[in-house]
Image (cartoon, rainbow, N blue to C red; front, side, top):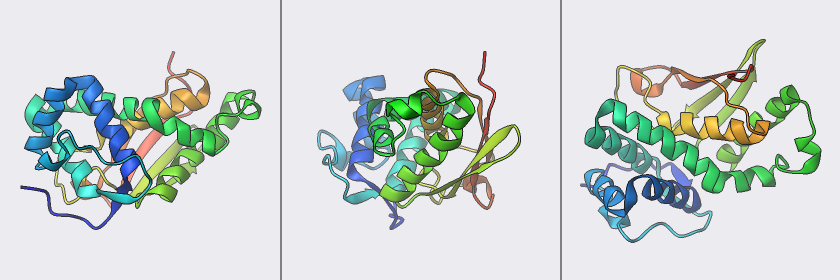
Length: 209
């Protein structure tokens, strides 16, 4: 049965990038099984079109992540969702980064702190501008807080822990791209699914290693 719709949407292009990233990770049969389990069999061999029309419901993104955990267990599902998030940025969303001026030469020669200061809000703005997701970035002394006031990954979901791993993977890969190859620690501090007022990712400014 298809999930109950939220009335909030990702553009078709974002959904297409996510599904293609998942297919690359788990193969066509694996993805078809996930789509069936998520109640999204209408998308089997019928991916959303490559356009920016807002038509892929937030409830569908949540259903995909829940299905990953049901099929592969909490740990396996988490690992796959993180990989899907990373692949989603790598395969497609960095093209939007170029739109925001984050890919040009002037940006590439900036010192690392400036890259983060400009790049993170640029990523949040892209997702807020093109979808119904509401993201903001606040800077603190040693970290950035990336907030999700309206989240596509835990719509109407209840959990005892933060569960928005696709976004965590997407941020990890986005930071790697923005910083020119560094890895950063990204923690999920709060999540609407566990009753918090909003989702918060904590991004530590100091790269790992």
